[in-house]
Length: 65
Image (cartoon, rainbow, N blue to C red; front, side):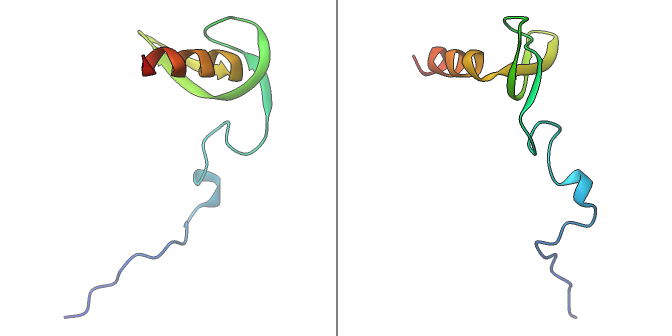
């Protein structure tokens, strides 16, 4: 009764990372609507999209208080 344990290997490397994980990308931020370096994606209300480093840090500090 041996059961195979899944290993750390990723079957499809293209699905291992998110859209903004591999390289710095310049896109329009969903919060400030300026073209800046994007750090990730975020959902604000019913809108979802890329967020820049400055807005991400400001949003993160706002959530801590």
